[in-house]
Image (cartoon, rainbow, N blue to C red; front, side, top):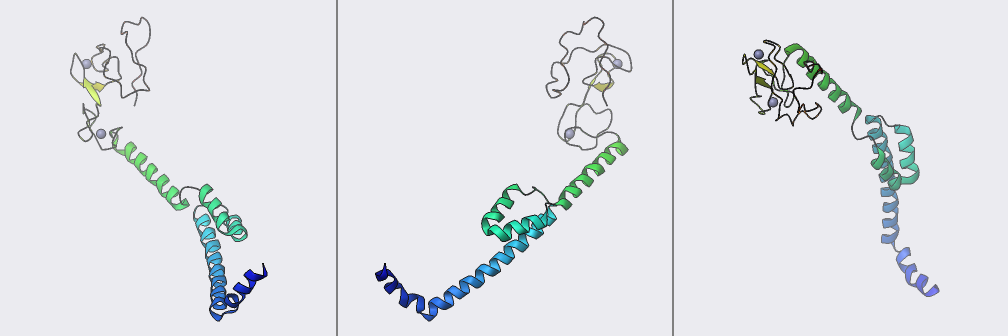
Length: 177
Ligand SMILES: [Zn+2]
Ligand SMILES: [Zn+2]
């Protein structure tokens, strides 16, 4: 053991080693302050207890910071607010304009049979009067003609597929809008 310290003593006493270790300590201090500050600012922008996480980064350094990185909220508060506003604006536009393709949100006219943008089937012509009616409607609201059961309705999975159009007293599906 003494042999090893005899070997190391000239190295640890050298001016370069002293300077290097001092620089390392300074770097470590600056790095720690930067890490704590970064964690505090990032947690603040994500609305996640900035003081708590700055303290965690201060006490545990990089491991504390790593824990924060794992469980921090996925997005900034301002981004979430912006997204919320965007959704509301889109909804308002929907209400104002009336018709928008449910698939690609491009504006459509009420009598379109198919979306010209994404080719989603929107309506089908009534078998009697040929006016555009919703694919889910069992009866034409214009001429009261019963429509044949829709086979190609796979996209609208939330609607029960009516295979038997002769189901006795079941009321026709309400027009969904
Ligand atoms: Zn579309
Ligand atoms: Zn009709």
